[in-house]
Image (tube, rainbow, N blue to C red):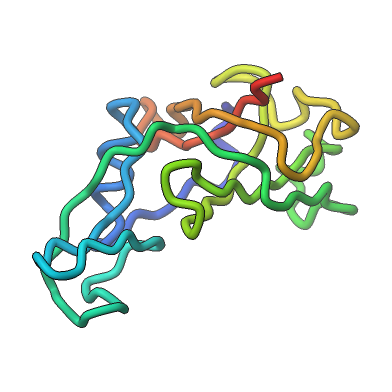
Length: 149
């Protein structure tokens, strides 16, 4: 993965997400209040359902389906233009259909963004999570997606 692409900048609330991704685990923040337990993404300090500040990180299966996608025309940044055409997708998690994650569908964890023909993408297509270290010395691990069919 080229270092020229924009890496995410983890904040305090989202740092555990990136730490788990570096271990090859897809986890989502959940309310730890006994009467609630609702999953939430993006991570934040307070539960939007009950107002509790208690939280935990629950492991997901890494499976989902394409909820939406776009092929950017033209790409906004020069580093991405070199990989056009590529996809940007929103994946609905199988374990938690109200949780949706953004990313890219690729042919393998270290494949370029344009490694999947855009004609293969379909809303509802099953996908599974892949983990791709990027940046200096693999400092951040991105969750990317592989088509299941």
